[in-house]
Amino acid sequence: MGLRAAAIAAAVLAVVGCASTPIPNEKIAVAKDSVQRAEQSGAPEFAPVELAAAKDKLSRAEKAAADREGQPATMLAEQADVDAKLAEATATQQKSHKAAAEFDASMQTLRQESMRNTQSPQ
Image (cartoon, rainbow, N blue to C red; front, side):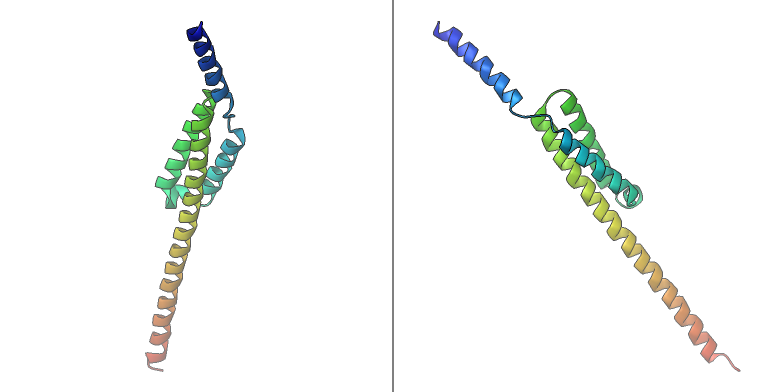
């Protein structure tokens, strides 16, 4: 009889353990939004590795949620959100760097043209 009670207790703990970690639908939705923002910020061009990591983790989070695996789904959704935010920040930084380099190049061109105009015989 003690073995039977132990088996029932173990089964109850297993069910409670599964039920205690809800499916993180909200966290998955937040991660999806972050991935979309990263895509719109230029991450496919400027941060493809970070964006790919975010998409992969989001996909795995959705699969874990579909399989009713709450804890892995939560962890993966949170990681996808962080990776997507990193992709967005990296893309923004890279675009700013590119814009600054283009500005510097155009300023250099203007300086050269200005010097040519002042040095040419009149």
